Image (cartoon, helix red, strand yellow):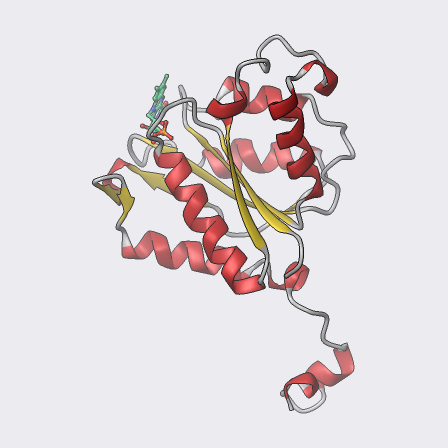
Length: 193
Ligand SMILES: Cc1cc2nc3c(=O)[nH]c(=O)nc-3n(C[C@H](O)[C@H](O)[C@H](O)COP(=O)(O)O)c2cc1C
């Protein structure tokens, strides 16, 4: 087993739909790419976060969470929509990171909201934020609304298919390297023979 796929759920609530979405993405990615799954909940590290001006001001649990985020082979970052945007403390955690901390990091973006109205929060807000960090955001982001859940579980087939499509897009970053020539010579993978 390689490194970790680490998810950050940006909700302060428990139970949390955002956590369910992050959990699903992390589990699928961890299984597919033989990595260890880890989900971090903002609610679990929020205690010292609001008043922290730098990572060293965070308590030990929150500092350990930051270390896991930075060390991950790939990230799943998701926030609930609050007033049309990602949550303030979610943003504050990212504000504390070094601007170069996530360069080249593959990131699956997600969000949850009450309805479909704010689905583009991923494209208009989360993606530019990770663009600042020069992270490798996957083309497919996953937005879930209340209608996609039943009894706390993600039940929308369309959404789960979209999630699988997004997880597929980690492949260039997480699959073992296949030599280019071998991959394209006759349409088969030389390593698969
Ligand atoms: C303070 C607050 C503001 C919210 N603002 C929005 C909003 O602008 N648009 C929306 O679609 N949902 C909004 N919601 C609903 C949440 O985004 C939605 O219920 C989300 O799935 C909650 O995620 P969680 O269960 O992980 O906390 C808001 C919820 C709260 C608590």
